[in-house]
Length: 74
Image (cartoon, rainbow, N blue to C red; front, side):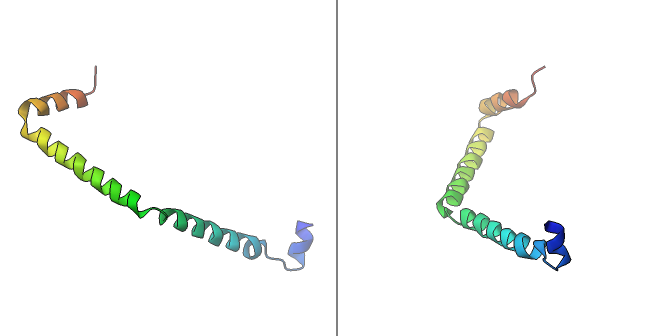
């Protein structure tokens, strides 16, 4: 059946592949734009993390503990 359709000129890539690709692309874009507050929350948490690192760097004892935690255990 597929061979016969191809022989008469049916283009499966154009008929099925392109619409399916466009549909999936729209679905992905819709999901990515669905929740802008999530991106803001990620930015906020990244700033909290950076601030915490700076606070640890200012305290020599806390910095030593951090380095001890990050060293691979032998």
